[in-house]
Amino acid sequence: MINVTIDGIAVEVEKNTTILEAAKKLNINIPTLCFMKGVNEPGSCRVCVVEVEGWRGLHPACVTKVSEGLVVKTSTGTVREARKNILELIMSNHNRECLSCSRNLRCELQTLCNDNGIDRLPYNGKVEKGCIDTSGPIVRDPNKCVLCGRCVSVCSKIQDVGVIDYAYRGAHMTVTTAYEEGLAGHDCINCGQCIKACPVGALSERDDTAKVWKALENQDLHVVVQTAPAVRVALGEEFGYAPGTNVEGKMVTALRRLGFDRVFDTNFSADLTIIEEGNELLDRIKNGGKLPMITSCSPGWIKFCEHNYHDFLENLSTCKSPQQMFGAVAKSYYPIKADVDPKNVFVVSVMPCTAKKYEADREEMQVDGLKDIDAVITTRELARMIRQAGIKFNELEDGKRDSILGAYSGAGTIFGNTGGVMEAALRTVADKLTGKSLDAIDYTAVRGLAGIKEATVSIAGMDIKVAVANGTGNASKLLDRVKSGEAGYHFIEVMGCEGGCINGGGQPIIKDKNTTDEVKAARIKGLYDIDKACVTRKSHENPEIQKLYAEYLGEAGDHLAHKLLHTHYIA
Ligand code: HC1
Ligand code: SF4
Image (cartoon, protein in one colour):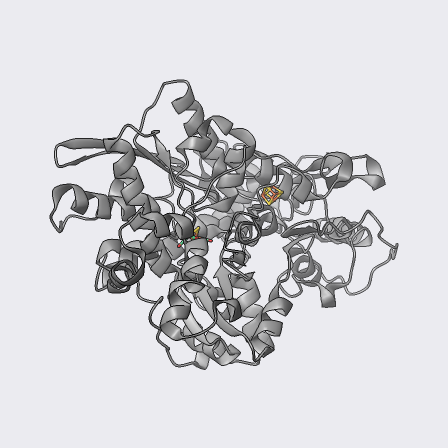
């Protein structure tokens, strides 16, 4: 252990601890900008500089390791002055249209400037670093970029995509794509993890709220909404609730107040996905189909696979994602039951995921000329609509979902986190294979935030080998092992974002990046708490799903189910 003194307080810390970490132990907050725990620690912005007794100059706390007897001062006059100058320089090269920025009041740079007494800028240069990229669901404004490199690290190190990087030098330095083309023309998977990493508003999602408002005001349309599993345990953060708080009831009431004709649930169609996907898995196992079968509900992962792992396209389940399955039944079965013209049904999705905007616009995501999904907004965009409508979210009564696309099981709920799709599928597959309704349905080996999880599940004399890849970076590692023959499975789950949809690119921004893991864990716990409280915890026991098959679809995998609920991929 090593003894150091920070701002006059002694502390004992492990070898290799940084000054930043040691200060945190003492509850001393050294401000940072480019630092992002576990992702990026290059010490490039210098906002975290501190003084060290006996050392010349100032030192970045995020990369400077402690040594025995170190005496550190984190807020001397010299430090405060330096920090202020650094922030003023960053601001001088930053588009300062804060009032109209999507990150206004949630911007780390704004907070830093405020906390460090910057009330007037000595340099007022005009910032023109390039055009705003609006080519796809991820919008990039280089004029707001502060060159912290957090998006670059997350895109290459965590997601293993690497479509953005630094270019040019000195004052012209910028973060951009190859040939400075729009992200949509590149291998970008639209995961939005760069948005969540960005401390300012240089990255954001395409705002589709105007499209939704317009539909809600159109009296000829019957506007229905579905909300993804992970939205309910994160939306509350936008209104002051702790991460993981289940605000489903208030969210339903808010959606009704906004004017949606019916409020449904993606958890319902997650259950539907399990019926089709479970059936497909058993069919592949019994009839010598392509194995391992790999889940297909995460659109970022699908695009990643299409770009980088062509060899595995036949391994992907042909099932559409729950978002798309929902749209397909909302425009076929539902109109018959509700006696509305399918052409007038307008389907809105509220998703934790920016890639869902891309998925909804894929050419193959339509049936008989009708797009499954008409508009996708993120959790953040829904919060904005609620605020825009003047709805006092915290004071709302709890509302209930509409029937007939609203009932869900615990299995459909846990889809929203890493390992959840696998666990939901195993709950159904085990019952199908044994012909019993099993009580032991907690597959804990596939839960948790580990990068890759593996398990062998023995069901009715059969050993089913499964694996879960948590994020595309881990999917690369896992698929490389499968490719080399080092590992073999029957079924693999891949989610594009670490933690699964609870950490999707459209979820509320986590302000303190040092608490990201705790926030993920709290949102996951929120989903499992709902699962435990559900009347049924298995997809095939969802009564509305049973009714859908009995009244309309016939058997899983039948012709109609195939036409509506399955898809193909592009090499
Ligand atoms: Fe997801 Fe899914 S779990 S992909 O993360 O399969 O977005 O929440 O809606 O479609 O159900 C996202 C979440 C979501 C789909 C489901
Ligand atoms: Fe990279 Fe994902 Fe951002 Fe695209 S959306 S630039 S893949 S982090």
